[in-house]
Amino acid sequence: MSLEDMETNIDKMISEIQSKHTSIKDCSGIISQQICEIREKLNKHLDTLEIRLKEELSKLENKAENDIQLTLKSLKEKKIQNVRKRKQMDDMTKHLSSDVKVEVDFLQSLQEDGNLDKDEIEFELDENITTFSNNINKFGSFRLRKIPSSIRLESQKGKQAQTTGNTKSIDNLVVQLVNTINTTGHSITGCDFLPDGNIVMCNYSQLGGDFIAVFDSNGIPLNTIPVKPNYAFDVVSLDKETVGVTSPTFGVSSIMSINIRKEVTQTKTEYNCYSITFTDGKFLSISSGHGIITIDANNGKILSTIRNDLTSNSSLTSFESKIYVCDPSTYIISCCDMEGSTIWSFKDGSVIKNPRGIAVDGIGNVYVTNQDFNNVIVMSSDGNQCKQLLSQTGGLKNPRAIQYDRIRNRLLVTNMKEKAFIFDISR
Image (cartoon, rainbow, N blue to C red):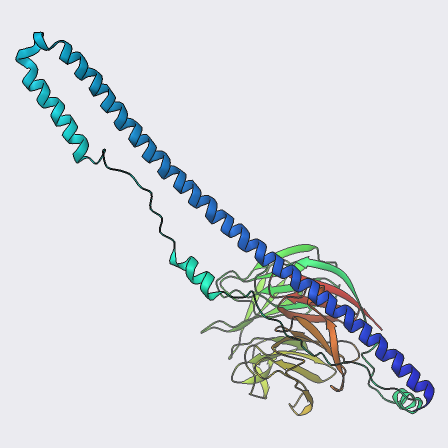
């Protein structure tokens, strides 16, 4: 390595450290904002409880005051009547005994009805408030998580070697946000690009409210297609007007073909199908307990099966006769051929945890949604390099589905709930 190479590498490291410093400040700012929002919600909730409690107290106070005033009024009226009767005593001697009895009965009724009892307002504190204050000692906790640096030391010899290799570096990827989409979904588990650049997503609720949502290339809503009584776990583009949708229903599993006119064609399958892709006129899908199955798109017949160690939450995609899989139960990202032979695999719990969606660009780079870390990781086509491409600072929160438009070099990332993001990718 020459002195010139040393200087270049040092400059790259300085740039990386400065970027790291900015990222830490961004993360700190976001977390501080989250703490403020939580405190604000707690304050608003406690303020509401206080207002309700004071309103209830005021009502009790007013009732007690009204009861006292009514009793006083009755007694004062009786006193006035009694004075009048005393003045007329001489004329009313014969009726005095019966009148006195009436008045005595009135006074006794006041005693018996509790109108002369002293009122006090009692307050019983809800024990959940005490439990809350005793048990909740902190909002949360912090930790520093290491994200591997993408820097590779360079030398002139290394640069010459790189020019002869097929693997392209992921260091120079440039990401530009195009638009943020309000999906209105609460469980977006699949997405894809249509040939014209439009976007389709599926909402998998398992409560009878599953639907397919169609957006234009900039994320403007075009159509919503309910699939009840079927489910919509994953979606894949078949042509410019039709998509395939997996419906893993107990008893009757199927793949639906849905066009923009909302016409549904259902093809029954032997096994439940979850994540799905479409290649060479055939479906590739993950079936829990069976593995990756190849399905005839015309009749649903299973043509072949490879690997049987995948869960229903695993995700797959394909590119140039290769299958790419992410498994959230093992944190493994892998690439295999169409016969299931592993080409490469990657596992690092400090980098990837609970991967839920996977996509591949036009040169074989792999993009993975990292749900627990709220980011997207990009990996080189040989699985040897990886780096964080998108993070929570850009709005990611429980990212799930992901897809790459190889024609327009666009990346689509969806949060589990509400938001999705369109990015332009350049090199």
